[in-house]
Amino acid sequence: MHLRFLTAVFVALALHVPCSALAEPSIIYVVRHSEKAPDGKDPELSEQGRVRAQNIAATLHRAGITSIFSSTTTRTQQTAQPLAQRSKLVVRTYDPGAPKALVEKVKAQSGVVLVVGHSNTVPELVRLFGGAPGADIADNEFDRMYQLIVGPNGAVITVLLTSLPATGTAP
Image (cartoon, rainbow, N blue to C red; front, side):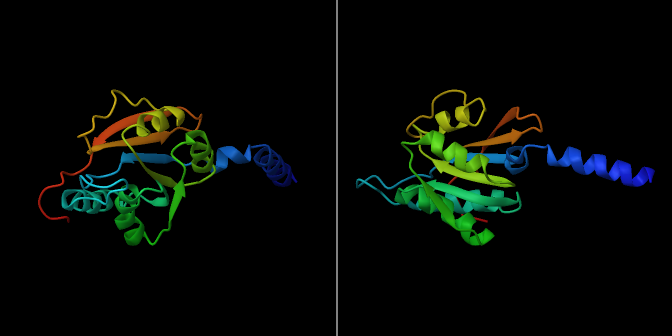
């Protein structure tokens, strides 16, 4: 009888937990696209950029990524693709001009999420996720990787990592 009462109390408490808290990702990685070719309106990645994209995939493939988001540009898609292939995930696109909509989509996910953006969008995304972006990203800076750890109370810890250099051969 006592056990049934406790079970009923635990079930009742569980039903009062907000669904959104259950859906939030535990970690969000945010990176800028890798090095791009110098020409064109929507350039592809350069050879260095392709190596860096492979290195990002090698770094994050055991991080438990469950969702990948990328803007619609070729360079962000190509940065996300090696990890997507390795993890058997589909890259979901977002509009970089609507960062709040992306944040809502990401917060509706569970697990670990990767977001690939641009030098002028990544700091704002980090801020909207509750993190601390630090200094602006320079035009020639491609190695900044944010790890945003979402705590049970919604507080975000920002860890600034560096992606592997774009020299040499991808692991």
